[in-house]
Length: 305
Figure 1 (tube, rainbow, N blue to C red):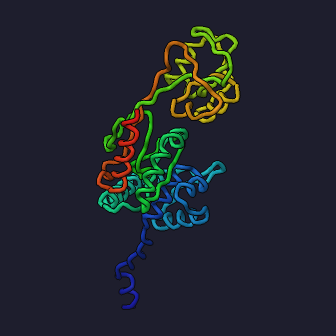
Figure 2: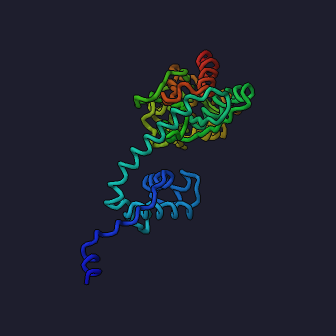
Figure 3: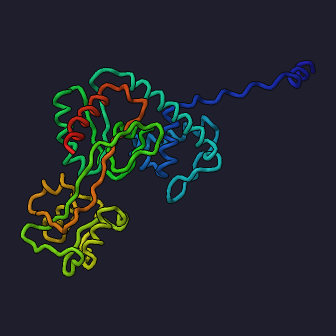
């Protein structure tokens, strides 16, 4: 009887502690939330899909929550997952700020740098600069990413970005690097059209998503009766098609003058050029290898423009 009374009056045993939550698991959660699939998240993180699945289960167990609904089309955040997302993003911001602060204090001219630019600019303009820099600083490794995505400098998807639009983010240190002149080209030996007409001519130009770019607008205005034969956002592809005789193309001089088999066409008015901007996160302004690459790039390209 006394034992029964003591049992009834005893305080409840404390719940077992939750499993510790790992920052690496939070990164996995964010990658899945942003990509919607394990495959896409695996590409972002460099982990395998089975590892991603195990990490997600570990995080859900640690939180005692179901973060995603598994559907035939991928992973969709549950209401609980939506509530966790904001906290996870704030954790990411703090972790990345800490990493940038540590990286920014490194003074050695060694280590890795990720550089992003458009495809043709990386090949025809940046590559010679990077080659000279790497010969001078063999302890530095550079990864050049050439695609159309606007990479996130806060997440260190890139350390240094070159693009034709100024940066809007307040945490970016930026400067106008150079001005790019453009010209109209055709395959060598082909007849040159007259400005204001273009009847019988074909155009190699930007695809429909970029039809409002200044050079595409200029081309339609100068040759209103020409037909569009080929469209692409890849400048190298435009240059190749132009050299193959498919049509006239507006190309940056840095690309056009290095493409064999094409020649300039003068319509009495040059196509509009574009400015190139470089930008990097302010937290990396003291990173010696980044500072050295920025200085080398400015010294080489800003004077050449």
